[in-house]
Each structure stands twice: as C-alpha cells, then as structure tokens.
Length: 171
Ligand code: NI
Image (cartoon, rainbow, N blue to C red; front, side):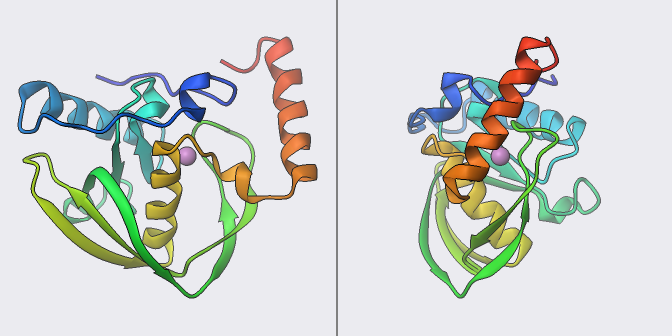
C-alpha cells in the first residue's frame, strides 16, 4: 500500500519516534513493505516512518531507487555509531518537496540498527549512503534537514511553504 507522504508543518515530523519492541510480526513486515512501496512511488532514496504518519523508529533506504534489490536497507531503532570526514552537497526531503539546500554531513557514517527479526547489525556507508543514514536517522528524532541550514534560509523555506499552504498547494 502506498501511503501519502506527510509534509512540513505536520507535528509528527518534529516528534521523537517510538522504539520498535516487537519483531518479526506480520504488522512489522507489512509496514516495511508499505514503506518501500511508498518510497518508490515518491522516487526517494530514503523514507522514515514518521513521513507516512507513523511515529516509529524505522527507516528504509535504497540508493539505487529500486534498480538493485541488494541495496534495500531496513534500519530499525538505528543509531549513528560514528561519522568521519565531511561532505557538502545538495539535500532534499520528500516531506519538503520542491526545495533543496546545501547541507554538510559526515562523509562516512557507521550505523547500528536492528533488522525485522530484531537482530542487531552494524554497517558503514559513505557519500550518498552516509548522507541517507544521517538524514533518515534525524527524522526518527524529529529533526528535518532544514535544521542544518542557516536560520535565514530555513525561515525563507517556511515562509514559502506557508504561502503554498494558504493557496491550497501544500498537501
Ligand atoms: Ni527526509
């Protein structure tokens, strides 16, 4: 099932998501499947559960956007273990469509997370994957990428979005 993507100003995006405690349930597997479907429908490389209105600590990532199944990643209750180096690049978010800004992130990132069975694993990534790890895990802590840009730029985006919302063009 494809869920609509929740957009900026919905409070679910700015709330700490709840940890997953039950694993390997039909509900969890269905949620993961729906998250991939919703992410591909929106042509994203990552999606966090709060972005479909579900305040739980799950994120899915696929930097190949559906091209290579081995790149499908599910991160449950993930944590950043460490980041190394820096990369500056344009970043966008399915919850803030139409906007992109330069964001500095760690060039490499190591995450620790659980899989759908509840098993912990550690994984390192760099460049786009490292950026996706950091962006999606931020979502699970109620943090959007615009927190990483200047207040001036952030306010400008918010003003534009408010205008779009008033015109009924932000749904
Ligand atoms: Ni995002």
